[in-house]
Amino acid sequence: MQIPNTIEQSFKVDYNYKLHFTTNLFDSSNSLLADILKSYNAENKVKILFVIDEGVYKAHPLLENQIENYCELNNSTIELKAILVVPGGEQVKVGDKHLNKVLQGINDFNICRHSFVAVIGGGAVIDMVGYACAIAHRGVKLLRIPTTVLSQNDSAVGVKNSVNYFGKKNFLGTFALPYAIINDNAFLETLEQRDWVSGISEAIKVALIKDKSFYNEIVEQASKLKNRDVQSMQYLIYKCALLHMEHISKGGDPFENGSSRPLDFGHWAAHKMEHMTNYSVRHGEAVALGMAIDVTYAKLIGLIDEATLQSVLQVIKQVGFNLKLPIPKQDVDELLNGIEEFREHLGGKLTITLISEIGKKHDVHDIDTLKMKEAVLAFYK
Image 1 (tube, rainbow, N blue to C red):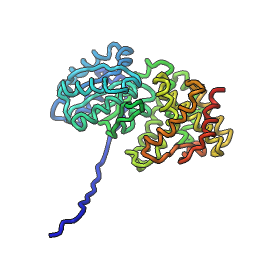
Image 2: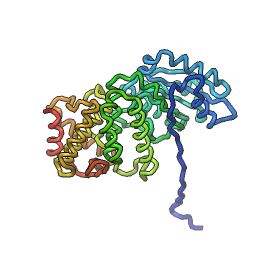
Image 3: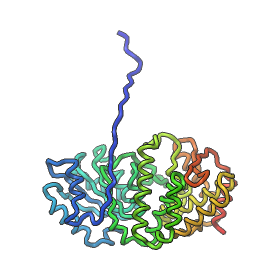
Image 4: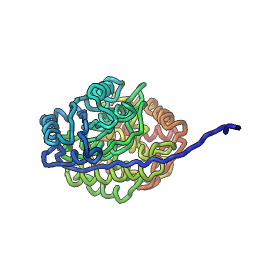
């Protein structure tokens, strides 16, 4: 009997996850968390380990007691195993110290593939904890509870998890969906102004590449957003998250097998800038500068006109960003090396997303280095 040279099979897997909006998640009258856990297992208690961003923990001194009381009130559904606290900010993703703390907790408190880890914090903490959950037991259930504008409208609603390694942002990572995301707008009340503004850059980003009407709404609401108008911010978060999740589900490449990553508009410079400043620059601040550089470059190569360029730069400044580069001028060439690092991260073929008009992305595969350097230098004037 002759044996075939190849066996080939194909299969499809349906993915489903939900983003919930609420206020005061751990209030005794709020059943959302208990309902989510019941939707997974209505017959037995669900074990849950909480990991909290230290900045959130300090800003909300009653949070630990609230969680404990909530779990006790719903003890027929929830079995609280422990509450861990880890540092906030990008440094939590550097190396494996904090990653190992979460993995140790998953091990010590017997969190299995049918248990949950609930992470409460900003995007960096959510990235790191998500990575731990993805690699422990080949995947334990993850609940994301983002607490910043940027994480509620962008980073926590995606399918990626990561830590930084070898001096490179997101070098280690996975594509792994959370069981659910819960946006509790009460956490936004304690944000520093810098963090309130920072997340707006991701909304401007997705509007520029996908939705002109949303961009115009941001322009109209710029001063309200800067001045912490809650209703304007809640709409911005909702709309940005919706566009982001629609891109993942309908864009045809949810796990980024191709080289085009439009949601990384402005990010080649942002990622390099964050590393060069030892992450003293917030991700959203770096994205704002990265977009400013790339729209300036788009103008220099004739993709957009002067009016479009000035509109984009103006709205970025109006919502509260400072468009002055935070690195020494003599380090511009090092910043430009970020283009090659971005190419490597994409998997070989360089694809940089620009815009040809408001709401319309335009991918390029070659960069005129001299013109890009000119674009960068424009933000030292």
